[in-house]
Amino acid sequence: MTTSHGKDAILAHQYAAKARKYRLRWIIALSSLPLFGIVTAFGLAPETDTRQIPVQNIIENLSLPTDVQITTAQTDNTTLWHDEEIVQGDTVSSILQRLGLSTPQILRFLKSPDATRALIQIRPGKRVQAAVSGSGKLVWLRHVGTDGNMLEITPDGQQFFAKVQPVALTTRTVMKSGVIHDSLFTATDAAGIPDTIATQIANIFSTDIDFHQDLRRNDRFNVVYEVLYHNGQAIMTGRVLAVEFINAGHDYRAVLSDVSGKDDYYTPEGKPIKKAFLRSPLPFTRISSGFAMRFHPILKKWKQHKGIDYAAPIGTKVMAIADATVDFVGQQRGYGNIVVLKHAGNYSSAYGHLSAFAKGLHRGEHVARGDIIGYVGMTGWATGPHLHYEFRIAGVPVNPLTAKIPVAFPISARLMPYFHRNTQSLVSKLNLLHGASIVAMD
Image (tube, one colour):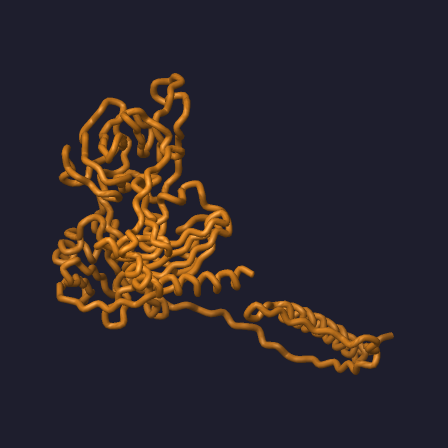
C-alpha cells in the first residue's frame, strides 16, 4: 500500500522530471537560435560519464498570467498615422473612412462646414496625412500644398476647424529593405515602407520589370528615400533617392540625379533607367485578357484580341506610356471612351473603355510619359471594369508585352564626372543595404 507521504514523493518526482524535460527543450531551442548570424552549439567531452552527474529535484510554484483588459482610454492613447492619396470620385466620407475615422467621427466631421469644404477642395492625386486614435478619433489631418502652406484640421469640442499656415519642412533620409513573398505592396507593408514609395519603385523599374507577372518569391529590394518632417512629426514621404531590385536573380539598380537638368533615374554607370515607353499604363493590376484569339464575350464569336485587357477598379488612373501628342479623345463604338496617343516615330497607343478623361485633355495636347490621361471604366463593349490597351506600330496593333521597346540615350562623357560625384553617396548606401540583406538572407 502506498502512503499519502509516498504519493506526494512520487508526484513531486514526476513533476520534477517534466520540469527538467521542459527546461531541456528550452535550452535546446535557445541554443539553436542564430545570434547575429552565429549558431551556438554545446557538447560534452568524449568519454564523459553522465551517470556521475548529480541530479537535484526542485519544485517551483508558478503563478498563472492574469487576463489583460484593454480599455477605451488605452485605445485612445494609441495613435496611428495614415497617409492616403485623393482619387477621382472621392467624397469626404470615403477619404475619412480610408484614414481610419469611426462612423460617429465622420458624421461629426460632415457637420463642420469649414473642415468639409477644405478637405473636398484637395485635388485628385494629392495626399493627406492624419493621426487617428485606436478608437477612430481624429487627432489631426494635414495636407501640405506645393505652395509651402499646410492645411491642418483639428477637433475642438463637437466641431472640426481648418487653418492654413506656412510650414517649414525638414528632410531626412530613410534606408530600408524587403523580401517579396506575395506582392510588392505586401512586402513594403511588412518592411514599414509607405505605399507612395512602393509605387515609385514600380514606376522606376516599369520598363525592366513587369510587376504584374515578373515577380518571384524571395525577390529582394533595398531602397533609400526621403521623409519630410515638421516639428519632429513625419508629414509626408518624398522621393526615392536610390533603389535596388533583385528580380529572378537579376540585379537592377537606380540612383536619382539632376545631371540632365531635371531629376531622373540612372544606373550607377550612368545609363538612363527609363526607356521611351512604359511596360504598362497601369501601376498595379492583373491581365484579364491577352493579345490572342479569343471567344468575344459580347459578339459571341472567335475574334483576334488586338490588345491587352487590364482588370482594375473603376476610377483607377491610366498613364500615357510615353511622351506623345493626343490624336483622339472621345467615343468609338466598341471602345467606348477612348484616348489615342501619337508617339515619336511610327508608334501610337490606344486606351479604351475609360470612365472619364483627364480634366481638360484635348486633341493636339502634348502629354509626358506617366501623365494621367483617363480613368478605368467599362464604357463600350465591356462586361466589367477594365482597360483595353493597344500598342501600335505604323498603325498596326502588336503585342505590347513582346514588342521591342525603344531605349533612351546615355549621359554624355562631359557630364559623367558630375554624375558620379552627385551619386557616389547613394551608391554607397545601396552597397551597405545590399551587404546587410545578403547577411540577413544567409
